[in-house]
Image (cartoon, rainbow, N blue to C red; front, side):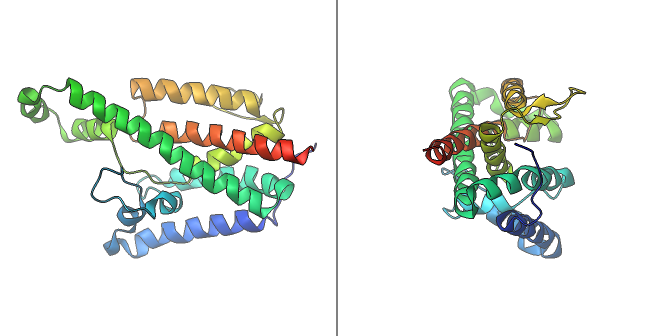
Length: 231
């Protein structure tokens, strides 16, 4: 099947518009700290609210403009095709459920990391350790243990995962490879790279398990719709 970008995808256009509007609002109404309100905190955190399970998908980092650019670009490129193929309702099911499952994957990972630190930290030495860390190192330590989740990466990863189910041989580019790779193989490479990055903390502050959880969730939800579509 030939691949094309559907410029008339209603759900995709509305999702992109909402994300851009909220991103703009975080700057225009910065005094309200919108990103802190809408980001997803750990359920054990006092700042956790149930609505954050959904709202975190619509907030992006103010410090990293590429965060929203890459997410919206991927949503535009892959979302239109899935929406056209399955319809708005099934597209939104994949999008939101993938985002929720992605967050769950990351929360489980964060909880495991926090438990590991608590079990292995000698609290009698903790003040000494923190004293010798500079601000950046302290922030990296915090991010390694936990930081609030924000961004549509998990939901968008779900759409890409579903795309890989329906169009496994469609070629895409993935860094650092200078040649196109079948999307299913590219996602396997991406998942492996995310696991390595998580284990060795190569990119602090990035919710690698949310990406993995989104891809896996989207692929399996897409598989369910794929089976129904072929009966």
